[in-house]
Image (cartoon, rainbow, N blue to C red):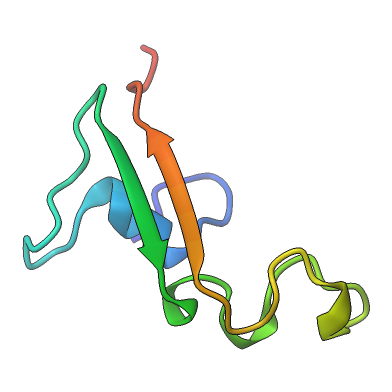
Length: 77
């Protein structure tokens, strides 16, 4: 279910498109949202930006929750 042309963590994708069962609706144009994404829907055990697999060099450490605040301004067409 990835509609982007780049890698998007599953939790962020859910925050934009909403959940299939309807517990989280899709974001509307002009809407803003803060997401607290658990590790299993973020970067998981690998983390992100790690040099040579070293956990002490990661931008986002392994098994970390990620908090993202964003505003959806539309597709710009």
